[in-house]
Length: 111
Image (cartoon, rainbow, N blue to C red; front, side, top):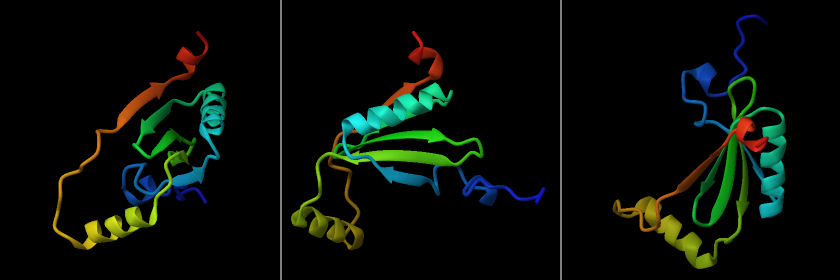
């Protein structure tokens, strides 16, 4: 299939992060293990602190974004009710801190 593009987003003309594949990490150690494995395979890795969760991202050889995420602060019933209200209520400013990004490259991992 020479005309088939296996990138699930880029094949549709979208940025690679739009339709990405995400996996649940059991804890911070599992997240670090996944990061280190990607670095060994020569992939650049971005880690983002979302406040309640830490995620790492890399692109596979086809340009698909892959995510491992650890939800270290699970959502409560009150959180879920507030999220539902935010979906249908008036637009509000983001109340939390700005996300923190870290970039890891294979070359830096070897030093």
